[in-house]
Length: 298
Image 1 (tube, rainbow, N blue to C red):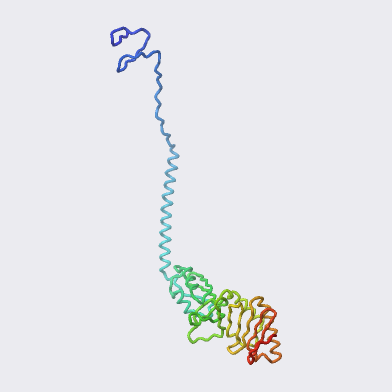
Image 2 (image 1 turned 60 degrees about the vertical axis):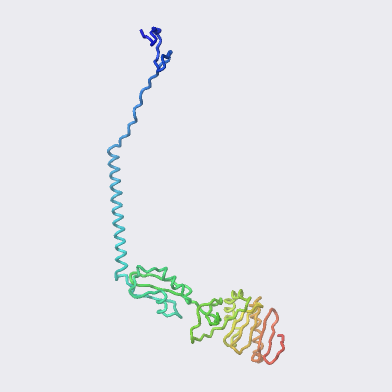
């Protein structure tokens, strides 16, 4: 028989629970006992997997060692090659230079006999050549073990032009190349560009080509002056004391042909020597004689 704390017998068939504050009837509730869960065991790797992992680790370690060895060998080999005599420069070939001599090109690229061809920077040599005022294009080729080949394309002067009071060579577009050498003589015509006529320099290459091919001024002597005017005309002076030819640039190829016909007619009549100025604009041609102040239409 179960006895409660107050001394009275507990009823049969009832289960009670003791608490800190006294007795609490438990009723018919049953305590459900759950089985304890066992901790999940870690899977064990098979022996073959462990051996494979160790083999892979060993292979990777060996590969790293081999790569380090190859890298060290390459570094050592490169250093040996760049300080040895095998790659020392013995032959330098230069092609395409007409105005420039080989000594000036060597000075430009700072190359000396015995320089290491393997350590030479091709880009640096090409950049140095491109910076020379007379060189338009340059290419450099390394031929191991001891040869360097340089090909240059020089700028071709077409005019002389005054720049800040000094004579300069200029190309076919009127761009400055380099100062005229002291004491040097060149039969190139002087180019003058009046204020406001700068855009007309784009016509210069075609104009020079057409003049050379047409032969319009053949027999007039060398052209000593070519002037681009603000009135969009091209003035040509044949020698210093020769006549002045003024050609309007609008449809200037046709104007050039008209000038050729007028010159042929004046030459046939024996009047060319006394001509001071000829102006061609459209279908009109004006001829001014030196002894006359008037203007005659032709």
